[in-house]
Image (cartoon, rainbow, N blue to C red):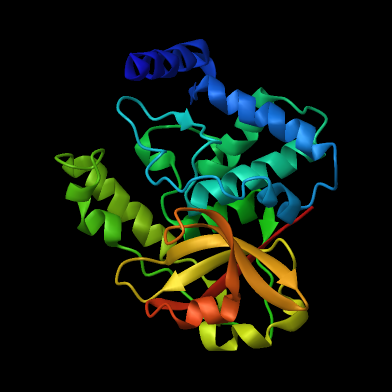
Length: 275
């Protein structure tokens, strides 16, 4: 019965918001309203908004689903990317004149989809380097450089090389070929990344609330994890949806130490909200 009620709620939400292609559960509006009350009790900084989600469970794959591509909103369960997206969308909503769930969804769509348009599975920004570039073009973030930066090119190919792992691409050579073309375009981008051994020396070049995109040595991938920088005693820590802790948490170890013990991590790209 519980499963039936949940399925009905999903269908109801999708139908009720068909024009906006939005899908969510009633519980998500409850969390949203709770956040609005929380936002009245302090500042609207990125880190304070991210703190609202501390202890929320880590759940991967919440953006996937059967049927047409939709803006799937889930404020109850987060992975590393959806944490970043939801926090930024809530921050931008609070800075707007409309503190409504519909406006939050509109902003989230702008962040998650290429140029803010939902046009099938491939319109979603599946690679974080593509996500960063889209947000930069839309004036949401900038990508500050610093003296410790080195040039970074995405080098992505994982999805097109493993189409069988993605239900939307499996048995669909046309979509798989189109994903390969997207990857080639993204691979022409250039970013500034800081090698992980230099992160401890960033000092003032990393700020409270900066987006942290962790680059990887894994073949065909660009970024393996994301989160936010929290500065304590002039030292950066990572606030993130952790696969190890299975929840949103602030790492006890410094960002430098976190990166050092992860063999496949190569460094970080820093993103910073424009306003």
